Length: 136
Image (cartoon, rainbow, N blue to C red; front, side, top):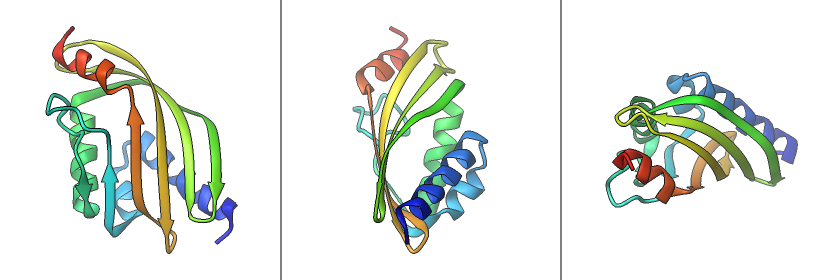
């Protein structure tokens, strides 16, 4: 698979996520996908490791329950090489429970296997997001 093919898979995945199409997000992953957002000492309900398509669907459900997006952008696609894609994105989100707004820049690393996402690792300013969940 070419770097461009790998990049196209991730662009489709991001579009599905942005559209809220969780069934598509789930189908775009391997059955044994490893989904690793940052940890947050329990205050952010979806920030823990997830496994498998059902785990990804539950992560997305909890994420969408907890947050409302004002904007979601992938301004820079940093690198696509072989089966890896690294992206930098920005989102402005509101925590539904507290009404707190967060301008969040994030980094994501995807690994693709057989045309599907096999690994996802995500990094963001967890301290800022946790404060919004706490209402501070």
